[in-house]
Image (cartoon, rainbow, N blue to C red; front, top):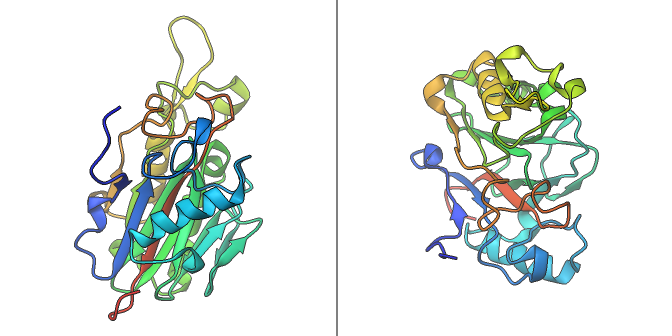
Length: 255
């Protein structure tokens, strides 16, 4: 397998936004072994915590932060969002927003999307975890609304949708498909179960929330189709690691 020069995905959407730091990990660059090889960042997995913390140090240091500056959503496939002003694990929440500097909001994923948002003028950032349940519950526009309460303006907000499972591989039951608008559901000609396009649904929800199309970037990569690069809960039978998407604002003096 070819190794990337930089194992992290750094969304170009945020490159020119002063103070914004954003990244999404791959499974490369860490010390995990077996099904978790090698940059597993999820403490919810069966891997020992010490190894995961080593990986978190590697990941955050590459961004000029430390694991002690991470504010992580506990993630229960819901739509609750919390405004945070300190690091820690916030159980019961799938979205976080902040206007504090030097705090890195984090979302773990292994097929679901991590949506990263930032308004560089208001200096407000947000992050949310959106699988099919979160998408149906519209957690992404709710995160935009939570950012507005901190002074963000949707017209100035930029959003990036991480690699996640693609429509081609996201087969669901009819009870799931019926919760999506028909625009995001395809029915295979062979009569098997329908497929859902999470990325398109999330993109359109961001547009509906007031973000300009040019300020929305959807990563085209599929976690299910590329398990050399990404962890995939579906493709790997549930025994796998977690990527992490993060976004934060550095102070003028750095982290």
